[in-house]
Image 1 (cartoon, one colour):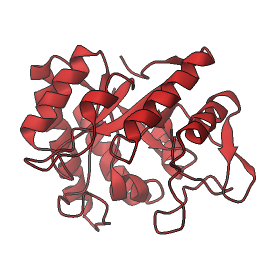
Image 2 (cartoon, helix red, strand yellow; image 1 turned 45 degrees about the vertical axis):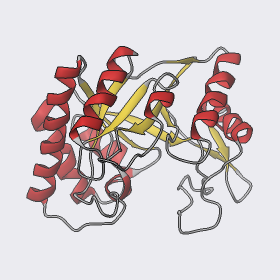
Image 3 (cartoon, rainbow, N blue to C red; image 1 turned 120 degrees about the vertical axis):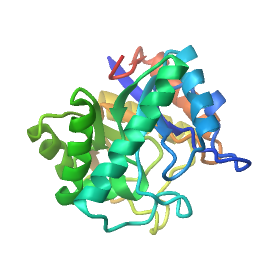
Image 4 (cartoon, rainbow, N blue to C red; image 1 turned 90 degrees about the vertical axis):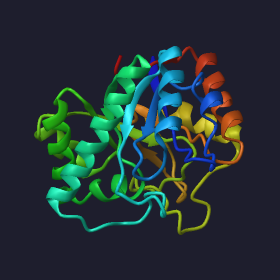
Length: 252
């Protein structure tokens, strides 16, 4: 058995430091690299790309709304043309840096509010999908497990990878528990590791309603910027290894 572990990286901006890129990269198999719209300055992005290349970690464009102040977590009502151009710009910029770093962009994972919005808003999703296809139709789209976006993007001709979150709580309908609600994030590393094993071996997790909830996970996101993130990622990786589950990227 195998699974991809991904993490959001390259998010430091000038003197403002974010995440634990150097410690997380040896643990994961895919790195979602910020493209400057929600976080990440050119030097930080380039350094993270170089580290990923050295460790043979696959690289994806972590595209966002243009929202540095809000860290890309605020909804924006952009026109099709604006969003198309924004996504195209970010992929292009990251690919340019990746080429210099000795690697290449293999997939696209939207960030924050954009990720959540296009999971159900197929009008905005179309702009993102079209930008990916115009740049390189072979790029893979990472989308929220169980969302309408997955089938919609596949109908548009994209390869789609279904993503689950290691430390996020789920409702019984498969939706993530909102960060505006109580206990949306799980901080117990051992519990999170067991939930990851359940996703891989059983195909789901226990929801906050106490029901087993099916979740299709081709890739599992481990956060690199939360409290105890590195330790949690290590415990997850160790648990997978102990159960003979190979951690490998979904793109080479």
